[in-house]
Image 1: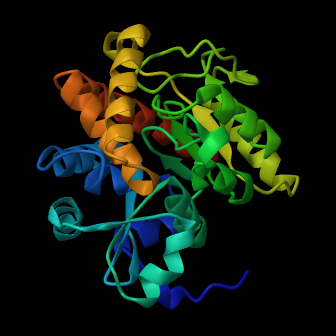
Image 2 (image 1 turned 30 degrees about the vertical axis):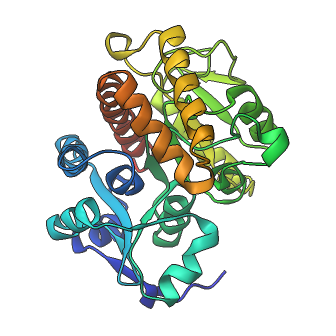
Length: 305
């Protein structure tokens, strides 16, 4: 597929890393615009970038500003995404509209994967992927992230799918779409806020060398699509699964009462769960993203070595 690269605005630091094959990871921007309140969102974004740089890995936070795909954000860009109201939450479906209308958008997992692939970045760190929503057998609410994982050659490091989802159906969908799901030093799928979901992952790998090797082998074989690397939240920040599930159930009831669905559902639930848990879920969210960035950095260094 030939891409018009005048759509891309690549930060010089990022372009140098891409051109010279230096270790690099991409980061999404929805966590900044829709995942956390200000100023925690911009502080977290800067902290994640600094974590990568401390590991000698170049971070490329991705967003769309004024219709331009920004591969790497400067400080003003981060503040803009963090503070601006009505930022579009963009997945694959929204990209052409957002760019043609010269709008501003934060990128979901699916859009970040697409833009990473356009720029030539192979490893992306996020919090949790989207998936099959609870009740999807009635409303067909399934995140575009899952199909993107089946078609775009980018490895995604996450703490599993967001715990607000139907994790069993999400795993079934990923199997159907042929997406390799790796548990990093775990046999169980992490459940975002909690270390374990009770669901087995198909593959366990205990070293970043083995993960990088699987990625290279998959793409060298011509097998298109991503690799999902699930990384449990550190034990000391893991929340009790029964407590967090009760909080999720309360948030879901409120969302139903308010008739909140579609793209608005996930940010609403995350905010509501944060309120119900008195901020504990947000603290866990920040810690698990940090943990994922650190792992993504180690995989990137191995992959680009």
